[in-house]
Length: 171
Image (cartoon, rainbow, N blue to C red; front, side):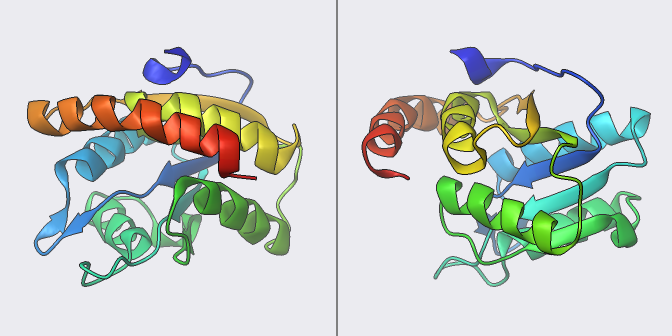
């Protein structure tokens, strides 16, 4: 799949980290994989604006965005460089609401961006990004490894169905 590896082009100025389930004790394994991938990239690119995108599910005590903010700041990222998008509940909303947040905050719509998610998710992210943004942003992707085998297997089975659903219905 196209999205299962890092693909960085240009000079990204904005990083978007897509949310995933929050557990009572903090980020799920898949979300922590995404956050650790982002932290690794931020070590070499510390001045990026970071958008954490994810709302609060019915079984989550805080929003995914707040959980990511807490994790990143606990690991040394300056909270002033992080924007929270905490209303989305699926991938297309993550992207749409993130673009709206950036536009309202006055960010350059031609800026290069890098999106962080697990590799299995990035093919769908790219497809939806092209629909939502219409090419306004130059998109790079960072594929977080999926370190937990049961979660990885579950998502590799789920994602093809989600890709078809998004192709047909997410506009």
